[in-house]
Amino acid sequence: MAKGERTPDTSAGKLLKPPVPAFTKPPQQTELDQKLSVCSKLCFAIGGVPNQVAGSATAFFLQIYLLDVAQINPFQASMVLFIGKAWGAVTDPVVGFFITKSRWTKIGRLMPWMVGCTPFVVVSYFYLWFVPPFTNGRFIWYLGFYCLYQTLITCFHVPYSALTMFLSTDQKERDSATAYRMTLEVLGTLVGAAIQGQIVAGAHTLKHCPQHNNNTTVSTGHLGNGSGAEIVKRIVHSQDFLSDAVSKQIPFHKGFFLVMRHGPYLTLTTAFLFISVAIQLVQSNFVLFCTYAVDLRDHFQNIVLTILVSAVVSIPLWQWFLERFGKKTAAFCGITWMMPFTMMLVFIPNLVVAYVVAVSSGLSVAASLLLPWSMLPDVVDDFRLANPHCKGYEAIFYSFYVFFTKFAAGISLGVSTLCLEFAGYDTGACRQPAQVAYTLKLLIGAAPVAFIVTGLLILLLYPISEDVRLRNKLCLEELR
Image (cartoon, one colour):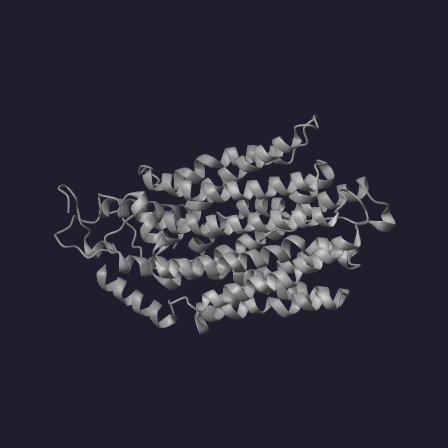
């Protein structure tokens, strides 16, 4: 250990076992293993709602806005969606790097990022939905502001998701806080989709098709004890304590290579990358499918809301299920549930089946949202045991997971929009060629099933079972 370094006291709740006598714990320090109250969990969860309200609006309606309001062609729209998502994916590890290098402040190391970027997110989001007076440069306009929005929202989301590790050292408490977060985030998605969906759908209907033949094309996207002041103090104090516990932080490149060589992390990330692509393909093309492949164009808004309501309601169900049967089992059951119903809609296209598919899809969407964020802290704990002298790696885990999932979402959005271009999609038209309907059936049926099966086969190799998770928990408690 280098001269001047300090090692943590076991009574302070640090993860490392002290080889030498340690400093006295600060009197204001909050106990990290203290049980979280419902109010504390709600305060943490509310932080993710604005991001989801804005994110759901862009994910659900940005494609129709680009195609039929901004009037850019499908190839340009696909480039905006793909490059924007890919750029957002690249910024995740970059932001993670700068977070690990940023200094500690009176409000911790993560909170300044979230507070500082918020005003700029609002400005970039506003101009993303603004139609400039010129036409020739609109592709550059939307590409620029979409990339800027993705960068700024990353500066909020990466530190916010990493806060999970600082709420408590108790795995059950972290899982419960994650469930609260996912419930409110999906609720935010529902609110954003419902409000902006009515605006966009109404404007699109009035502008384009006669009332008796409304073909509104909408692209859906994929769905991160005490008062609020006390939960912020808990996070700040826990960050401050962890910064003091070990004065020397591992370099980012070393942390990156250690994380990328950690088997459970690679397995979990790869599995949910394929599953994320499948979910994204279904959700991003579901309303297009209802509009052009089957005669359900008058019901798409209600079907989308059904999916989201089902997701909100089912998150507590999956939280109970994972506590009762384990996270890996919950992942298999939740994701597999989607496959037969989506195929059923392809072969039996009617309204009743569509609502059944909407409810079942909501269940799978909830599982795909909750499970990876609930399993990531277990992977971090496993990494702690394998690398007990590492510090400051939480942002690396979360930023690169978001990087892979965003990159997958960008690929699926870009490729699916390009497929529609090749199939002959006519921007702003009330009717589309038969080849478009056939392409949508492939994007909603066969392709997602193939990706889900691949992801579940990889997930079979995930080594952190409930027994391993319990063993890790006991070992970490001994090290504190």
